[in-house]
Image (cartoon, rainbow, N blue to C red):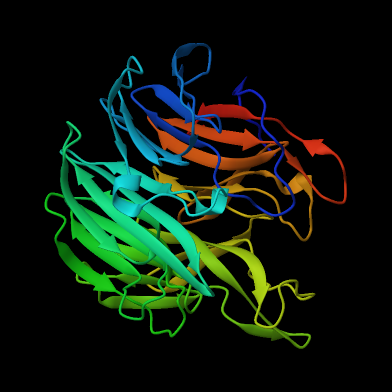
Length: 404
């Protein structure tokens, strides 16, 4: 295994447990800088080699999403106000702030799961985009309130897109915003919505052929086309710009193994050189929360081109993201809560056409990853498996050249 060349400590953080937890950190890279947001709300900027801290800005709420350009740093929080912060990337000066609770309401229970959550953020030439959601229980019914917001660069809201569903990811390309909705309790809510970034108008929608409320796990643009992870049928798809299916591919669909029907959700997708790389997660079963069987394609990366598989690779643990740069896919591997082996923690690099190139090992779990300006940046968090009593790793930021 390879190893990261640079690292810096980020302070104290309670160790994660055997099961993967919610986002507690975020990272971005642009303009020769690496930006990191931590669980206590602090945002810091470093040079790409982590030789020096350039500035630091305090906050009070966990930073869970982040996007950076040469002149904009956008920070999304999870907490009582679920604020969006926009900072100057050179100085850390706060330009403007927006509380998404004005749109989706406040938590109905003092619990992390109930706090409003800015799931994802992005920056275009003239817009800052943010997707926020809030969860509550109404008796036995689960309810999500959500909004996608389009701001001008001075912080004025130019449009809103509201639905009673749970956005999980967004991406932008050439004036379009693709939003993936995971939980859709209402049958008429589409799992994928593509909006005009300037106006917020709906350009196209897509929904899997399923009766389940789980719909889409992730989305990525592919030179005008759209790659989608489907939670409904556990397949990967490539859509054209109008939302028509060009191909579909079985990822971790339901299988009967030793008397149990098991599956794994495809949680992430990125596109590199026209190749869609899908990533699956943990094994689940129809009849129990803790199956004995393991799906053979859990925690696996699949590279698909024109509907045909190029390669697969077992990642060893749960991936929080999939990123692409210069014909390569970057996939972090965190804990596998059933096998519980710290030896599988790391960040995998793949050539889009050929497959696995190298793995950078990490003592803890990689929970946030960014690629930009020929730098790969990763946040490591400590983890303690419930049957070991040993803390692996620490709260750190790692970098290395994106290509080497």
